[in-house]
Length: 329
Image (cartoon, rainbow, N blue to C red; front, side):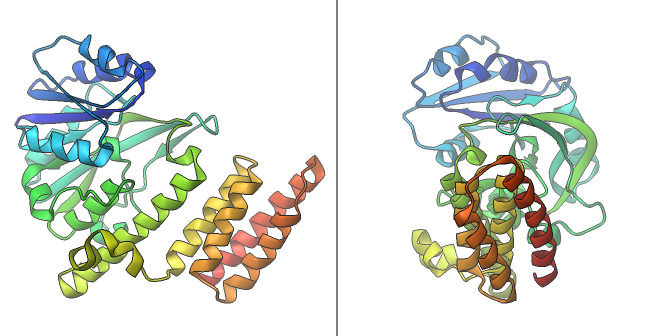
């Protein structure tokens, strides 16, 4: 079984060497490794060109964005299965071998992930990402949350094509939208071993409140599209194309996710401006019984002036508000 490993780079010259070497060190031999440089200007292309190995194929083009780049890479790949690898991340030596074993032994499985170590360079924390629930249908889980990180995943080409592949509209959460559609044609699995290390960097989504907002709205678009496909066989993008976001319904689900991000902005980052913007968006999504709780929080955020004592009081308040919000969700 040929595995096409795809990794897309843009201006991450310092994250090339160890990451690509981890792909060359895989214990599974039958691979092609497709390296994509998406118009980098910092020497990333030259760093990728330094790797000379018959398994490697390098694609270089002007900047198109991640989604268009990965779509093109999948088209050019030859494997019957595709493994994604995030730029700068580390695939542990047995990752590909372990995931191939699952696909070879389980023809009903079209997508497989693994346990992930998430190293967050923004908050200087390390956590283990393992949200997949064994025994629960994949699509049912996905309608609530994405249980994979993108770079850990391997999928069958036929399931990818049947689902329609990545969609260019999704600048972020393109993986989540794809899994939601693949969940209608195949099943999911998780190798219950730590096989992947993911790095969250300051130039990533979590480092920008604007990117976080767009990410959450696109994730909700993916969920609402999946729900429409289940009910009617067509979704908002099928109907309205690039204008689909204008037809997104207000969502309690999105309101709570935005609020939780606001809480995290204070608890983990001490960023009051980010918290205020996220809470404002949450209120716009769902002005219900929860709205009065959120508006009170927003008033506090607006008046907040800092100081150790005030910060401690704010953290205690947030924990209390979060409990109330979850009860009214």
